[in-house]
Image 1 (tube, rainbow, N blue to C red):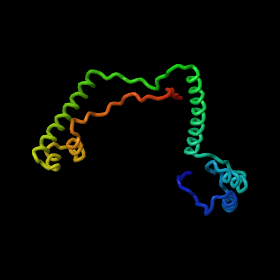
Image 2: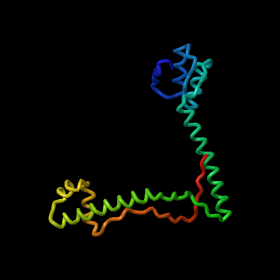
Image 3: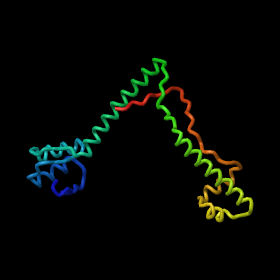
Image 4: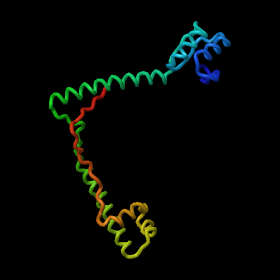
Length: 172
């Protein structure tokens, strides 16, 4: 533990191999191990006087698994109660955008629309895709999208998705 390095690597992962190794190396006081029952048996047989401890990673893994089980059970119960009550619950609430956010979004849209118009105009004038990319400082993918679009491609909006039932979010 002082060097933060393994002492040895066993050739096989069995309780008997660990017990044999511990008998050949007396004086071990602590064994940091995972949750393997084979390791527990081997440590108990090979060095019954040692204290077996679980490392931080395995402690966190154990806690995470317990939290997932508890939340899974609780979430299912909450879903059943919500369905039985016939009450619609929104899973989240959309934050209204401020006037400065709306203005910035509109300015960005106008810049994109100007790039689109200029790109299409240059293409119709016979400029190559590479020349348009260089002149407008756009990616080749964007120029290809603009040229083949037929109309200014608006950004997709995130409309609420219709679902059969709303599921509440449970945070612990």
